[in-house]
Amino acid sequence: MLLARKDGPFNKLDDLLARPEQWRLARGDSRSVSGFVLPQVQLFLPHRIEMETRFRSEIVGTHQATALAVANGDADVATNNTTDFARFREQFPEEADRLQVIWRSEPTPQAPIVARRDLPPDLQKKLRAFFVSYGHVSGPRGDAQRETLKALHASLGYVAADNRALLPAARLGYQLARQSALNGRWVDEAARQARLARIESAYAEQAAALRGEGR
Image 1 (cartoon, rainbow, N blue to C red):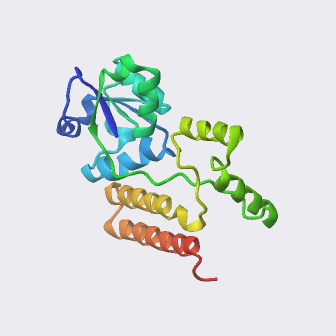
Image 2 (tube, rainbow, N blue to C red):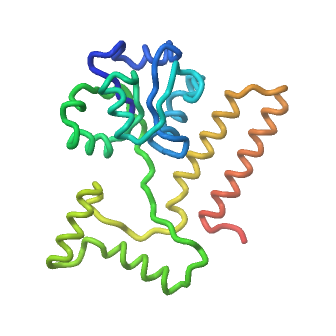
Image 3 (spheres, helix red, strand yellow):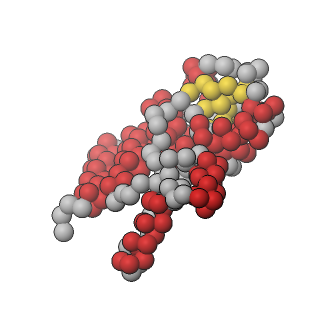
């Protein structure tokens, strides 16, 4: 989501999109799904705005840092997410009260836990069993685990998954690459189309591998 000050220079998304070069942006680094990828893919690139170049200035940092930047007047708009903003509200209630949400994305993909493919099978099974059972045991040990999950905003714990759990993240990467190619400057249209074709091919290959298709 995007955060702005309640008493800031604008309070509508249209004002931000109409004149991005007038505003100071606080965002996550380019690997952050909610801090960069989702707002870039779902909002800014469809409006032909590249986050890295179109704003007057930018601050790159954690979700806490970006929210504080807007709350303290060092930036005009910040990327964030509902989970981290809930933590921010608990830790900085006064600063959080200065902020308002002006845009929300579609839900972010769940964050999977991954392991190296070449780990011994027995170790992989032990790791899976540990995470799946975490927070579901009884007694003081289970109580402590449930408190840890609550602090992580993951009260429901973890469920078993396979490589298909990575498909939503792969699709986001594909969408970002495709939107960037569509908005980029090219020598000619043939070069753009060649780049788009490579993106389509790479994504199809990656998605097939994650689904367990092919060799």
